[in-house]
Amino acid sequence: MDFSELSDEAKAVAKLMIAHCISNGLCMGMDEGIESFNPNVKRNFRKEL
Image (tube, rainbow, N blue to C red; front, side):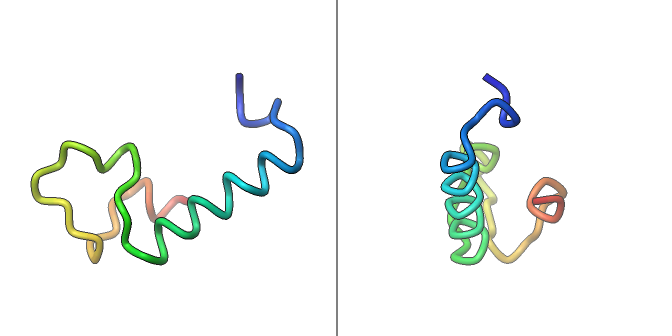
């Protein structure tokens, strides 16, 4: 399923979850496994989000 196929409610929840992770420096799926994860370093996908 593509993001565009989600309901408006599901899209809103996903956006809030992503915003929460970024604003609190929490790991997201693309960060997992990166030994040098640093929440203060804004990787390209975080900048885009």
